[in-house]
Length: 178
Image 1: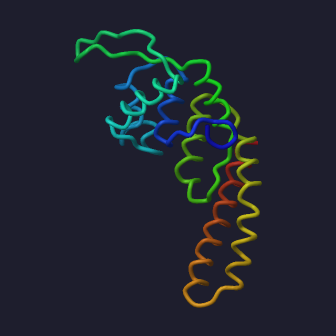
Image 2 (image 1 turned 45 degrees about the vertical axis):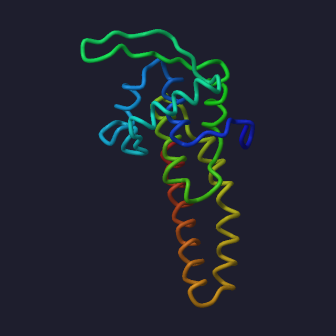
Image 3 (image 1 turned 90 degrees about the horizontal axis):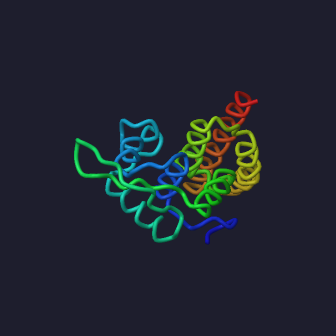
């Protein structure tokens, strides 16, 4: 188990699990949704091999289970997967957790926001928690910037300004969500 009682999964594995949790589906459909041209691929793109590797790992962890086989005239039969109760609980918990680092806003938080939007769920609690998690980081980075000299000041300034911009982004998305 990882932080806050959720399994330690990669972002790709979380994305695959969340899509299986939405409805029973197969790897080809997930790969289509997460490919470069897919709805979620615009946010975080996955190669087909990563999708199938993720499904195997989720199956081994007991977070998904086989739900049947779907025949298709366009290729081999496809194994349909469904989320187990443990997988469903993990998804519900993970979608509420803010990301730990500002650098993960572009990837993990955006994936969570896209998935919440697909589900028609209100992102306000997640966004509020995310803002609370980032505010102290901004304060610490401001202090680092003010103490630093030379290139260290440049780097600390970049990190601080990126964090301030992230807070402004969260404020904007929160305003729209409310």
